[in-house]
Structures are given as structure tokens and as C-alpha cells.
Figure 1: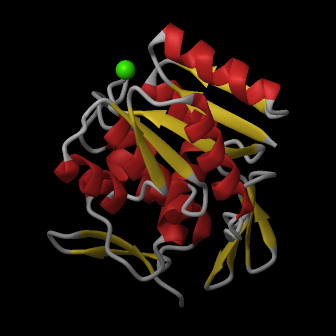
Figure 2: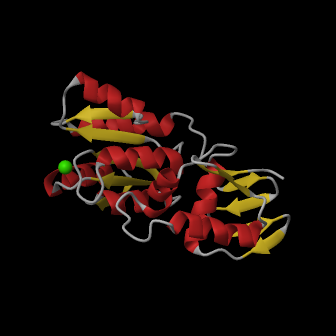
Length: 219
Ligand code: CA
């Protein structure tokens, strides 16, 4: 049972780490939003304590992406912003709870325990639609029972499409979710990878919706 703390202030990160370790949790700290987001995708991470003011990727952005990538993962937001509107915005963005700095450790621990007790559905590790099956833990993909070799980017793109069955995702959304919001490579990278996937999965699996984006379809 690991708790991931994404916090760039060493004093606070240490304080939270020491306290949680003393309470018997295994704790990992990341001080950068992007690295934190990556670490949070590991299945042994059971809860995230997330600061909002982060280098690399703002905490708000980490939260939004986590809600897509691991919808059931509990996230407790640490914020210096005491304004009620900010709190409401955080909860709307999918935080399970929040604490306004400065906070006491016992307050945090109570919330961590409450979150871990509440029966959340584990984030699904096998995604299936229309004969496509992805095991996100082993990174295995099959189409109609046949194993398909995908590069890691192709896998991520297909995973995002499978997590939004029937929904049209724009190029921008796919870029954000698969490549990261600050990606500065070729602008047609989404198109290129969709083409790769069509070649491997069959051309009819991913539909182009004119001027809107792409959608995974069940044949
Ligand atoms: Ca900070």
C-alpha cells in the first residue's frame, strides 16, 4: 500500500513523509508534476497527496489527467489557496478531499485513513471493447484473440480511446493525454499514430469524425 506525495516544498514533503511512514504507510515523494503524474500511474500507488503549485505540470493539470487515467484513485489536494471558490473548483476537478495549508498532520492522517477505507472501485486493469483487449498491467494487447505488438505510445493512445468508448476525442485532448500538454513535436503526431493503430487493429476500428477528432468504434 503506497502513498504518493507530489509536493515541491522539501519541508512539507518531509513532514508528510515522516508522518505517514510512522503511521505504517510506504511513501514515495515526487517534487515535479510531470514525474508525479507518471509515478501515480503505477498500480501499487493507492492514494495521492497532491500539492497544486508544482513545477513541471501544475497540480490542477495532474488532477485532471489522473481522473482520466485512474478514475478511482483517491486524491487529497494540498492547497495554499484558502478561497472557497478554489476549493470547489478542486473538488469539481475530481479531488476526493483537500486540506488548506498550513494543516496539522493528524488532520491529513484522518483524511488519508478515511479515503483508504471508503470502497473505491479499483481502476480497471483490463480494458475491452469490440474485440480489442488491453491489459494495462502487462501491456498486452489482443484483437479478436490475436496478440498485437504495440509500441508504448500506440498502447497509450489505444488505452485512452478505450477508456472513452464511443466518445469523440479531439487531437488536442489526445495530445494532452498521451503526449503531455507541453509536447512540441510534429503537429500531425496524433494522425500518424492513429494510422499506425489502424494498420495494426484494422482500418475500421478508429473512426475519424470530421473537424472533431477520433472515436473508437465496435465493428
Ligand atoms: Ca508548491
